[in-house]
Length: 352
Image (cartoon, rainbow, N blue to C red):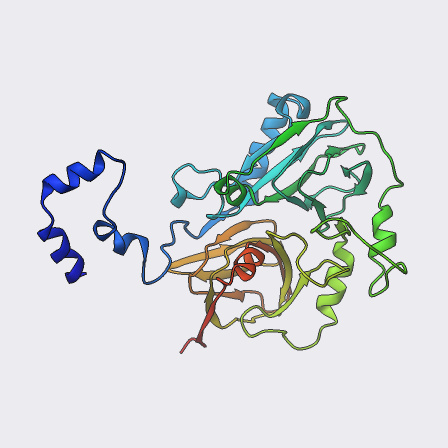
């Protein structure tokens, strides 16, 4: 810092004015801003309560149709990001509503997306002509540039958590979107057909191949995820309790090149060890109640709440119940950081 101040003091003001004429700027003026000792974290820990947002979603359903809105969503906006469409610096999240007898029009886009079902039984997302039937806790993938729409043939509203890599793709200048000319993509395969091919629990069709970088399995049922957690035995990590990653069944890698997804279980009274990592996470409470300490923030959560856990912030989680399990779903930008060699993690140890 002293070296930079000395360099600035020795540089005449007229020189700064001259270099600015040619759209250049001395690095020594801003070196500390460009090369920081640690990553500056602009996103804040933030909790969005489902009990607050659900009535607003239903009100939106009275104001406009799914076709009029194209996607009837309340975005989860991080207060530290000054109006950016983002829940963390790289991740987008929103709560989407579709009412009985509605179909949200078919479109596609370069950002990858998934749906984690919060409320409702029997609605669907159609991906490239395959209808994926929704149940609470199911994870449904919409890969980049896949045609998709959403429909509800039941008699009750359906709500899900949308997760996308929009801030990351936007930062790369690679956002494309396109509506489907015919309005709704025709059904081309039996419902949940891919689940039979790729979701058989350790078995794959002989010679199975896939032409995309994303998982070929577009739906991960909650029933299977919960069973895996409950049968796991001891906690898989001291930082997250029992935690499993949703993976590409062909590679064992993340579901998308840009995003990974996880589900974890905290036993009654369980408290995790504090740590921090470069990846940011959006956390959603499937069931149970607890508290997360993220940086200086204390977020007390209940079932169906969602919260932001920015990257490189110390954090820990605790199940507040003495008798009930707590289940959390989360998604993260970790695959990008790992592929770029930028991922790191630190452990602060147990609270003492």
